[in-house]
Length: 286
Image 1 (cartoon, one colour):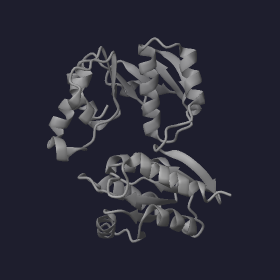
Image 2 (cartoon, one colour):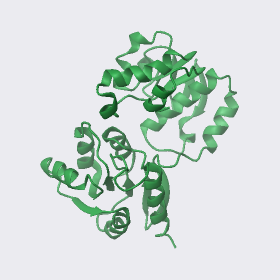
Image 3 (cartoon, helix red, strand yellow):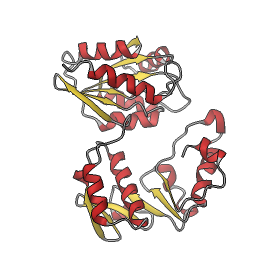
């Protein structure tokens, strides 16, 4: 549930509530980080069981507020703030029981390992059988618009991360794929700290292709940071076409749509934006 949905549904009391991460977002509506936190916390306070991401820096600072919660950590049992699930020797472990090997998960990135831990923990709290959990993980193909692999063309992977609508999510997406990367970014910019995102661009992006209203602003920010391999292409059609042209020249391993922006300047929502990207990428493949 989004913070908007939680506000509109104050009486919802789930059996299990999961808090995956907490970063500054929607502050134009909620004004302060504490207000935003309180809205999210309201839902968890009404749940019978709380599942928290112990690797999230902000949530980890709030351990004292969640004495009865279950926690997760990809860094192992020693890093757990309390009881919960963790990774050990390549396995997801809950209550000292190995449930499923991490290698069975098809999705890339440490954040998806965090998601795996929270999903397995939630399933066990719901009394779902261990074998059923393992089978579900093995056969799960991934989620649309969240580091979704679209196709491989000329040995370059085209990946749709349209759901990355802020700097933190886009940094995670970019960190999760193999470099060199041609990054497609831009759209309807949000308020936030872009420092980590820009540092990751320096480390992994051979080229940044900019679309939408944020293109000029992003160009300026990248130039201020000393990054000069950005190009304003304005639209998704031009971005995919240009990425295909540049791919071999920059030895790209991945073309990644991870916009760091909302979509409302050019699309109805992030799903429509990702669907358009998918369509254009699939047209590259004979």
